[in-house]
Length: 368
Image (cartoon, rainbow, N blue to C red):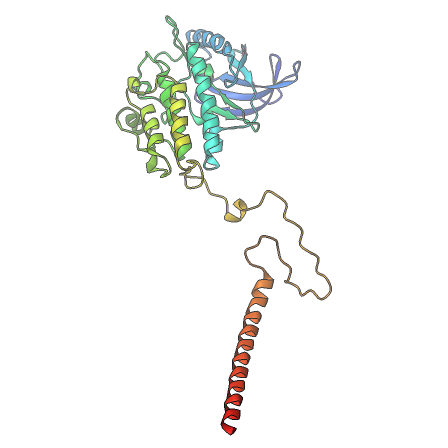
């Protein structure tokens, strides 16, 4: 497949490979005429000769390209290069939510900001008849400026009446995040399947893990269909009963028992989270298995500049300088014991002097 760095693909020059999934490989490319970077998703060779598949994929690409929302990565183009179909999308510079979760606990503000953006993007897509079917942290992009984008709508299922899609007869999605109906292979899906996956993302943001973990895909899929999810408070004791109730409703096995829309779920989640007595995402929350917390000295490093130490002047003994705000200072530890000894000695001398004066007065009285 000729997509190595430097290759000209239509109006785009391939820069580097960004990642590879089960159905496509993603590259960073540069549009010379427009002077901007883009992301190019190229379908794997397996699908190259399947004309029926390619027609369905082309139809989906056209529908997804019409999605215009501030929290959805836009699709710019769809074409073929040496027979390989590819999508051209906006290039988002940043990290995925999966990357962010690997760094440790999210704050309450982060959880709300990311969750609200994803909910808005999903509700918009559903209003246009498009399901995502694979909502997960690696498909949520975060920028340094606070932007949040849902990506990978290119493999979505169209729910408009009479349409068939590339996902027909295929179980799309990631086992840890798919809904029970997806796991069963149900064909007639609606927005509540994305609500379930979104609920797992919220669950992971407050606990640091997904509800169902196992070494085998079969076991995870079995749990998605049959097993009740562990209460979030099992993994993070700061999760309030109200937040827990919202998340467990989002993860109901039956679509009818879940929230109807992502926005409805997010509204209930926001209210419960803001009413919680503590910041659910602060230290103490469960984190991903591979996460190693920063050392205490790193966390405690102040953001503001510390006033410079005073210069040692003539006669100033080394080590006697102090740092403002420190818990103890060399001066305190060196001088305080001497001061206490001097005070005790003065008190004893005063008592002895008083006793001597009293004895002298008594002696004079006796002589008279």
